[in-house]
Image 1 (cartoon, rainbow, N blue to C red):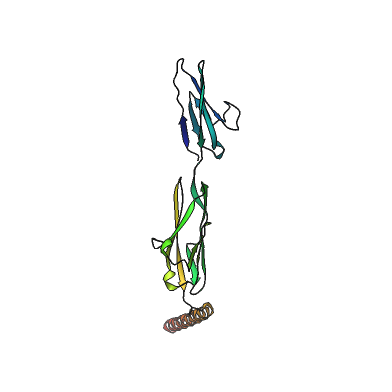
Image 2: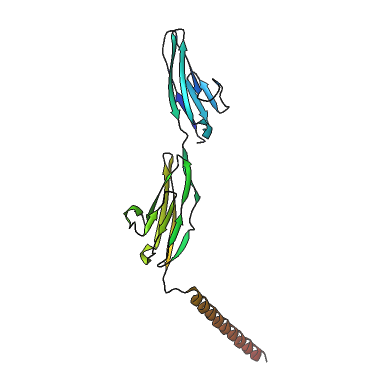
Length: 208
């Protein structure tokens, strides 16, 4: 979509036939500004979603009329609309949810991998990949930590994104860690104040 394209239609006869295109649902031989029919070649200068549909090539002469109909589908490369954080943290034994959603025309399919290994080979009891792009990991284990990739693809191409999953041990206690961090920072501040007082005292004595 957005690119330029053209469709050819040729016919022969005596006398040479007039070759023209029509689109189903549109007034005959009436085209929007970005579409032009030149001697049986249909030019699209910037393809749009509305260009999708059935097109009929008609060749006419004094000898009669022939026609042929084709279907034109507009393809749009996938692009992501929802992605996980670059770093996602999950608790050991818990559930991790990674959401990777993409749109395009036709609707892209989404495949997951971990450390460059396709998740199709992983245990279906703990890994569930839904068609909407959501990956659920049940009973998270330490081995689940790693680099995860999400690839969206359709006939227009592929898009890929990567994220890291970090698994916190069951023994990790955020409250304990915060208290410990607070006590360490408090002790460091006390030492810094003590050093500053000592330096000030030495300077004062030295100046007397």
